[in-house]
Length: 236
Image 1: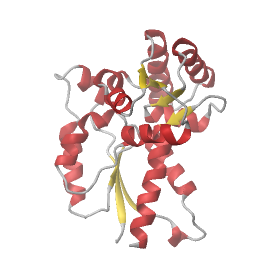
Image 2: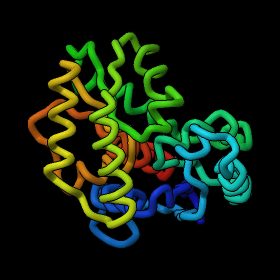
Image 3: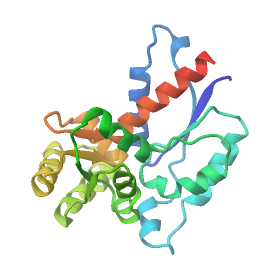
């Protein structure tokens, strides 16, 4: 297979499925052969990223992730996509394991802020505790010249409930919970735009979208970047 890319997914599986669905929906295709060539590695048994980030005595997700990267690199994909924000804690080690570029989802999401909301200055974030704890997004947001705004404990607890209890455990999006915590984040921080920094939150936005607030959906942006690179590679 020529001109394909590899998706390192399964973190979680339902969120990866949303990424694939959006990718296929946005691909300009009128027949089977117009769709993109890609390999999906749905590695659902990768240990929980947040658990390890907060406690290094827990199983390390880096070992299986680097193994996946090395195995897939032998097939020579054009690039890798990693639809899990928290896993970007390991981005530098994963990129060091291959010469093939890995799209950096948080970085791409922050780039989109200026394009979509050029007057925004105060940027909020909702994400897993692991992503909040390891500062993946706040470093990118502040490096781009924005003020970073973290969620309150109340917002984080509601976010955890939505990600783990509703989506990961039961594949259900509680619309009231999702929209309520987004509204509370805007009310408490007075942010100009809010980044959804977890693919389960992107899944929630896909199923029960917030349409009246300035939202930066990291996974949706990764879909767009994947599509751009894949179509460019197809054209040679």
